[in-house]
Image 1 (cartoon, rainbow, N blue to C red):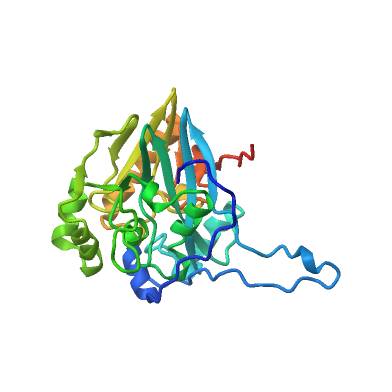
Image 2: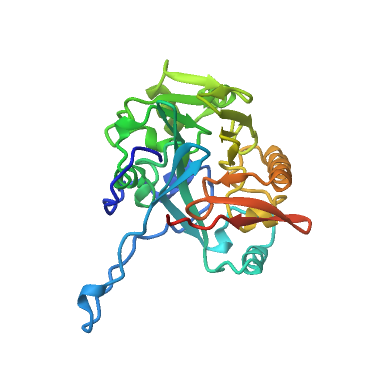
Length: 332
């Protein structure tokens, strides 16, 4: 999401795909069922004010700064499922999901998650963190390209993509509908542990993407410093080589927590709950608790891949658990 200075035209239609729900959930790392969020329905304007319909696409990009760096948050879509089908709290009574939502005044009809991508201009590079869903997650993902275009960013502008882990909502956008690199000028980075694991054990959908960039993957590890001010931080468990990162400029820092947490209410109130998305459950829980404790202590500004858009906020303690504190939208 970051770019040049763009035009503010309305985003074009989301990318569509005929992928099944089962395949979409598999690519995300889910085994359960989910009700994908449908597109907005059109309402007829009232006879009194036919020209004043309020129905339309939501704004899907948000500009901000990290010190002197330009940054852009971009939404790639989202999905939802009833609490009974929630991937949160595996083994917990299903009524506890609705109770935890209600405790934070969150609607209890559906558990909603968003897909968010971060773009930062660092020196001469336009660095993107993950690539969105692309064509692998059905009509409710894959909106990244259109929403980037609405912000004035073309795929050819992106010079580097960091793939934080091999779940479809994070790597699916690397290829277009014809199987060609969607961001042709971008170098691609992946954690060496993640690459080794999924090269040996990944299903065909994952292998296709690994093969597409064979010989081009730049393998990284925790502690590596890329570009100017970006540092890789190991956060294993969600997947074997999942990483998060910090971006620092002019005394300011942004912590991108990626998939350490997934839901703004459930993940923070119950970091001990097992999550169906997690490949290594015990390690993921330990990482989540450790990271949340660090974030609540240090109170850095945070970006979250699945937090409510524009996905910026901070973590604070709430008794024995934590809360997500949303950063106010800045309009000027």
